[in-house]
Image (tube, rainbow, N blue to C red):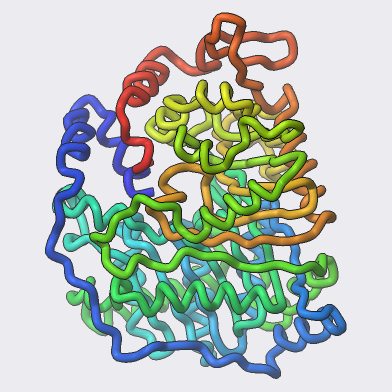
Length: 523
């Protein structure tokens, strides 16, 4: 989310004026022009690769179905990506909103570099909003003959205050973000879901863990992931990294930086869990996961990049329209797990959930205590009572949720670290499961590029439904409701709170003030 990293600064004592300035400057435009690519690029599948043979073998006789494996654990999500890299023979296409310049981010980048050394063609596509910390490293990687890197919808300035000025002066364009997340190897296997690349998403960070969910898949749905990548890779708003960082250091310095990256990836010094290294280990790890696949029908739905960045963003995008169709076709139950939750009057009228007899809609989201950003919580709080009035049952994650002990293998983290919800999943009538990058909020509906994987599997839908409901239990979440007077209250077992639980007055005050501002579309 473009304002996601920006608003913490706006809320500081010295930067409070920025919040007002953002609103005043909305609609201003900047001068960055789209790039012209020389031609449409597309990876050619290798029909005799290890991953292709695995897909053909495990899906034989499946009549066009795909295979799916849920990645609920952060550590397993990391190891799966590492194993895919080691198993690659021809191509790796990775597309992310955030790629952290931390232990896991540098390790995976280093393994991609080693794969490129062996002849694998690597393409990385990174959204620009959080690229500042790793842009120069990617510029060095982009000098490798087998690595191409593009940055989506970049700001004109690459660092410092000039970068923030670029965001403000080009507000409309900068708010069209590539939030999609896909990881495809040899066009035969891929991962899609909500996780970015970074320690806090894999359970490696000592201070914060983002609970999330991905899906490892083989079969026809991988073509949809590839189509998603291609659409953004060939967009005129995807800039070669060399065009954004023309002052790459001297060749000797680049060589030294890449050699250091190779060393870090080889020694695994910066990651707390041993990762598969080399083709044999990678294939062995993947084979263990592929033996547990659930075979079912599925499809990938993604938002195309905006053709021009000044076109109106007033109608729901493709992924939102697909979810709307699924909602309208549901008779009994919708279970939502969304880190950021905002459904205003117009969206709830389109979904038509308030007047449908027998339909239960329950949503799990972050509390003010677990939300990583006060601004995002404020946008949700602005519409929370209205959502409750429409019959949606809302549960907010506790900061001391007992489920933390099940999510993380790290000893002691749950006593001292901060756990947040980052997952984005919806279960319809315990028969259809949606996992992807789509938060149930206005930004995902109107502004972002998103990707969702729709799986028609009662088995997987029931499994995720059970997972969501377990986190809704009193030991993990507060149930939010309206009392007889229409005031908001939070319940957990016998405890009842009349204001946002377990947070100080200043955080509550920030959320209340921001909830008065009509900025929820940009959160």
